Image 1 (tube, one colour):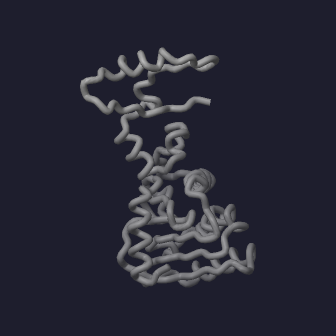
Image 2 (tube, helix red, strand yellow; image 1 turned 90 degrees about the vertical axis):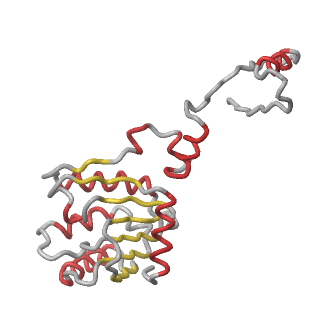
Image 3 (cartoon, rainbow, N blue to C red; image 1 turned 30 degrees about the vertical axis):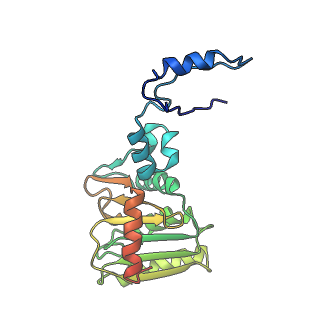
Length: 220
């Protein structure tokens, strides 16, 4: 096991680290070796703080690819879209509640396979979910909503699905993990694959603000 220590001189006249290392050498460390490491994480302190605030502690140990945004290309297959969404939602950590803010989640002129896409994404987490909260704009396709609710409740009859309306949101957010983590999609779920769009993880500070706005509006 490696332990990193931060050593700060009490006297600016002392030459750190040379003076400190000389003191260290006076001790018998037995089977231990003491080395000087300038940047144990390869990052400056302020960079580590930014990453912790924006991505969480796991961002420091995950490979870079796991925290990057995902480009969804035009004409992307639904299988890949489901895979992309699962990749990011897995990182969020879906618990007993999933909040979806998407103005066009129940769209007019929905493709024939749209409800299947919705269910394929959410069904992976159905065992842990007890409540699904969906916030859309005030006008929506009630037929799509009905089919969607029927298919999910067939999978889990005890699942509570709440639908509320707001016209105050443009971007699309999926939030879970005790309302602490989330993702953003550059277009509504029904638009992924129609044009180039991004999926990305939300900053923790942004999740907090979105949740506050939803709470203040009695939407969750």
